[in-house]
Each structure stands twice: as C-alpha cells, then as structure tokens.
Length: 81
Image (cartoon, rainbow, N blue to C red; front, side, top):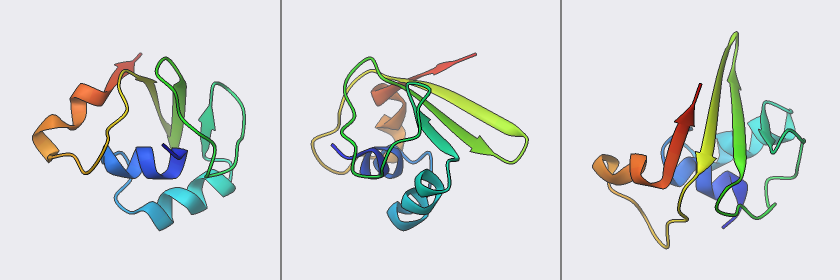
C-alpha cells in the first residue's frame, strides 16, 4: 500500500491529498527518510508525522486491504513514544 494511502486509511491524516502534500513537504518520514507519496509501506516500518511542534511516531503493525472502520484503525499501527 502507498504511504499516502496508508496514513489516510488509518486516519492519521484526514484526506489522501493532504497526506500527499505533507509527504512531499517533508513532514512525513518513513524509517527516518523523506520518500515519495507512492513509496510502499511494509509491516515494521516506522512513520514519523510532524504537525507543527508535535511529532507522532508510528510502527506499522498491519496493512489494511480496504477501508477501515474508525474503531478498527488502531489495530493497524502501534504508537511509539
């Protein structure tokens, strides 16, 4: 699954177009590196999302096959401190 699609599907960022712009702007990093929005996400990858002064680090636990209910989103990632 594409990085921009993954972070929008698990509802870290609301819309895929916004996720794409944030990735292109360097606000989202995959395993510590800037990547393109279409870069594939794999189980075990670490994603860092920067919202102003706040940073969120996530570990990919599972890849959703299709749309995910809001209640089930947290089953697809583990929040790191």
